[in-house]
Image (cartoon, rainbow, N blue to C red; front, side, top):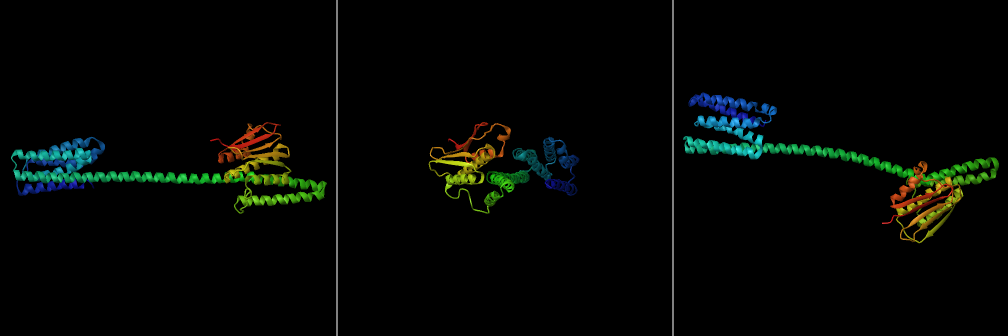
Length: 381
């Protein structure tokens, strides 16, 4: 469609030449030959340019020479200057603004040479000015089309970029949701491991003790069943707290020190583990710190009950120094922290995660038969 006007102008020139030939005077044969060559080159330009990228340079030079040749051969054929219109359009299309408008200026200078051949001054000047204005108009039209095409291409690229950004954002959102779900699952598993696992373990021991008592000392079985009932109620409360159905929290009353003492009392009642609590100083820690320290102590006591082979432990909470710390110490069978089974155990990993979550450092010292010392302290700035 962009070349339709150029084709229409050429057809109009041919029609005017036919009318001139019939009404005014015969047009020289050389003019008809050059007009024919001009038309062949004009209509074949698009196909040849696709095959030969440099063809527009030769096309512009040849077409310009043809038009100037026709004008200088027959200056009286004032309609031939119309052929500069499609050339002006295509020069800007082919070469851009600077070279294209320079070509348009060259066409005006070329037509000005007709005045030197004796062409009437007024008629020649009118033709030159009119043709130059029309050439500029065609060049401006080509410039506008090119700029519109560039804007359309830029908009297409921008739209493609926006689509890609939207796709990446959608993928990132899906990954973020998956990560949030995985994090929440990990958090829930860690809470279950730290709080509910030991209660279920104690319930299992209570059931086994009740079964043995039924065979050896039936009256004592009632005590184990009562303990089992207490553990079951504790498990229910823990599940409700984890699922948000209960507002009860181990640190709800009295802060960390009081919560550790209640934890020691529970372990004594449930498992017969004697836990001594030593608190030095008084200091309010952030709630997240209190919760994670409580869970670390809870997991450490779980491990002592299951693996240490003793019934005594010490929790030392130091809130007096520049850097708060907590130590859990037992003199049980100990273990080698570097072994694969212990290094990847969920309990130790969970304690390390909790310490890292609050910016504290967790250190574990243990050797077989020499007990275990777990130290968690604030990280020095």
